[in-house]
Amino acid sequence: MASLRCIKCGTEYPLGKARYRCDCGDLLEVAHDLDSLDVSRKLFDSRLGSLKWPYSSGVWRYKELILPVDDKFIVSRPEGNTNLYCSTKVSKYVGHENLCMKHEGENPTGSFKDRGMTTGMTAAKMLGAKVVACASTGNTSASMAAYAAMSGMKAVVFIPEGKIAFGKLAQAVAYGARVIQIEGDFDDAMALVQEASEELNMYLLNSINPFRLEGQKSISIEVVQQMGWKVPDWFVLPGGNLGNSSAMGKAMMELNELGIIDKIPKIAVIQAEGANPFYKYFQGGFKEFKAMKADTLATAIKIGNPVSWRKLEIVMKWCKGTVEQVSEQEIVDAKAIVDASGIGAEPASCATVAGVKKLVEKGVIKKDESVVGILTGNVLKDPDIVINYHQGKLEGLKSKYANKTVKIKPTLAEVRKAI
Ligand code: F0G
Figure 1 (cartoon, rainbow, N blue to C red):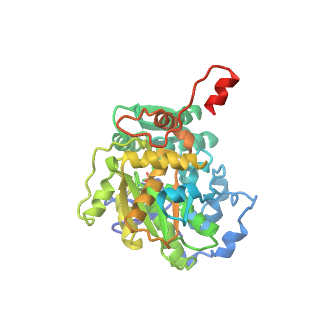
Figure 2: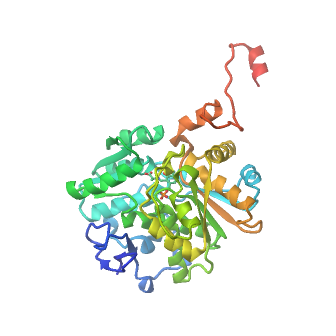
Figure 3: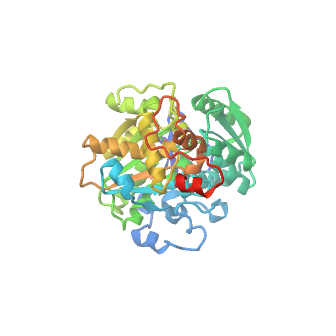
């Protein structure tokens, strides 16, 4: 039987009660009884391309490893089944041939959050919740709003005022969530939503909720399956609240324990220079974790006090991974290349590519190693950044790869000149 287990003191709690933290104050995780699970590569392969509910989802395909729950509770769009792309243009830019990008922007609401939201919302339904809540830099709120609408629950989202990308805000509003703008940043919103959900009986669907991370585990499991159960040498992904990178590590630990994989991938977490508390913690040898005031144009990862830093520390020590930071200029340039390759992704996602470039240059990622980078969100999430970059209007930054639009008089002669 699976249970909720404290990552620090190991105290266990039953799955069937809403709880986000241990009595000792630390984070909880879903502990599966791996010995009793009857899972194999063959089982998961037999569900590939399935039209059968819920296995058509790239999350529920791995149901036994994700959440042992009655199918009647499952809320699924379905999510996952996202593609892996290799691009000559991006490879050339980062100086590494063996790079694939998994595009999580292909999920139903345009980000990887849907993988965690299907499990989070399923748990909410199982626990009989009526109202769900989250703080968000945008994508979690977009995803939660959609899944709540589908399951007839009320959604309340707390967002930092004026600091979320337009596409994401538009989604939360469109899907009918109650949108509360906080005079403060994401970290203020996160603190408030924890208090508010406790007091006002709302089920909290941030990644502090251990069920969310179970769904997000499926990103790396799906990659490994897509690669014929070969494990890449590196997974590279952006880090904000640090839930996704923790989930990726947990998935790999479990597959390793089950004998489904025979190699441990190294995980590289990329933070923006202005929102890099975990980078500093890593650099300082995990001595003292210090929250900070965050600032970056990659608003998805503008987080100074990430919830899951302890979980990620465990993962980093296990996989001997690394943490890198990238500048605003490096993020926007990498984004221009990812976009111009025809793949396209939002700024935080492109921290992945900027990070790969840096790690290749530093020799941390070796020439012969295989790399899978995660693109976490869709290009249309943040149209302002795209337009401002290409018009040379991002303050203090150069638009090295600008693709300027041209305005002409409606004559053939002018068209000829323009092209
Ligand atoms: N990339 C994107 C596009 C995101 O939206 C987020 C997080 C991350 C990366 C970082 O993942 O937090 O698990 O380390 N967005 C959250 C939100 C915080 O509210 O949508 P993380």
